[in-house]
Image (cartoon, rainbow, N blue to C red):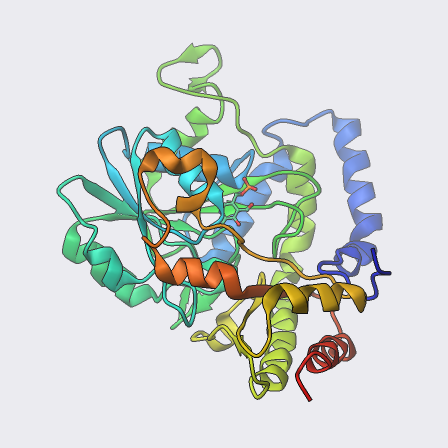
Length: 374
Ligand SMILES: Cc1ncc(COP(=O)(O)O)c(C=O)c1O
């Protein structure tokens, strides 16, 4: 393995300035002995909901739980169908399947990799209950088009906002479009904890109340279990970290966006390199910076050359959901989602994180340029 000069993600820029405060808060938490459903959780739920312009936040154990429990709280159940892009992280599907509902996969737009609403229309049946758009890589699915689509087909919108904390498009912030939105605070997310974590944002008081019960064994009052439940709570130590990070999130998103603009300006003229389109300007939170690699370049060769040059890259995601071994029972075949399949073969995620410098972006671009036929 070559020496890494530019990592894919580097969290030290976020953590170094906050480390002393995090340690102090954690010491305080230890002294207070409040680890579960503690004061930092309530503070973070309120702060993140407010920042996103949504009424309620319910902290949960992970983004996957946020999807699964959120959909359950919204009334999605066995017999229902939920529209979902074929090219998402598998957790979106897992969330739907955990309610007992059936995920109905939809192809995506080749320019943005976001769900193609024209393709989604063709998948609607009398059982379709919801659409689960994924604001993939940090870009929102066009909010008005999404609302019009859901309204005209009488569908709930469950936003998978795991990659789009405080991203916005056309004046609309992630999490404020649908019935509810699910977030992940996995460490490398735009807003990341130091462990697993998730949240549902919703304007619906009843859904919020159900989720508070679901995450706590179905109890609204201790030892009285009036409904279904599980154990899924964002813990107080993680919430304390997230509270400290949240005030920096907008600046971190802007820093990502600026580096993305530099990548795009430098890479767009190169033959064989096609950055995904940004239709949301500064509102794109660039959880990932993704290019398509086409002839005369070859994705695997380019990735190997970058690795050799000490530049880490990723592929998000190399196998679309319908071709994953565990989900063959859904009955899809190769060729069912040609755009998602082509993207899976061409996409490459370049280093992206707040703290990435312009000089590092230039070094990545130079290494790509070196691979072009002379
Ligand atoms: C689009 C998407 N949905 C859902 C999840 C699941 O979140 P978690 O890992 O917190 O369960 C993730 C991230 O891991 C994600 O990227």
